[in-house]
Image 1 (cartoon, rainbow, N blue to C red):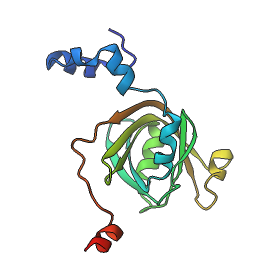
Image 2: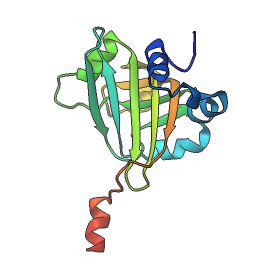
Image 3: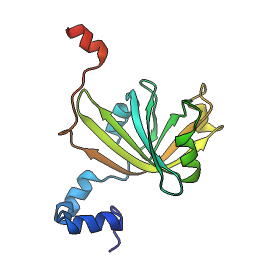
Amino acid sequence: MNDPNFHSGELEAQEKWNTAYYWDKPRRNKLLWNHIPEPFFYRIEQAEFFFLATSDNQGKCDCSFKGGGPNLIRMLDTKHLAFPDIDGNGAFMSIGNIIQNPHVGCLFIDFSTGERLRVNGKASIHTEGEVKRLFPTYPRAILVEIEQVVPNCSAHIPRLVPEKQHHETV
């Protein structure tokens, strides 16, 4: 069966462990999107960090913390987001993986509210041009063409208080 929402491994697992019934069309429409609705733009652009998952052309994975405070991410439209490549340790694990395999996953979590959003898409690296100009103080910018968005429930996200708020309440 060809399914635009799930690959064959996901479909096989759903059948094997009896969850295929759970993913009827109304549920798919509610929980599997192909874009980020505009009401989510502010939340994403105010995120102080996110997690970026990449893999090389052999499937070797890497997951990196990407932080930089609010305005780290720019929503260009409902199908595109961009962020700067902030120099880390110089190993270029994320960038190197994107060079070999453009598929990425971005995980946004607000630990104060428990809200999370998974964004999957294809990334491209920009060293000049319009996308790069969004982040003039950084050597590179990453553009993600959004393919799948999954808004997750907050049931298992721990509620954490930022250190500044913690000290104010103690």
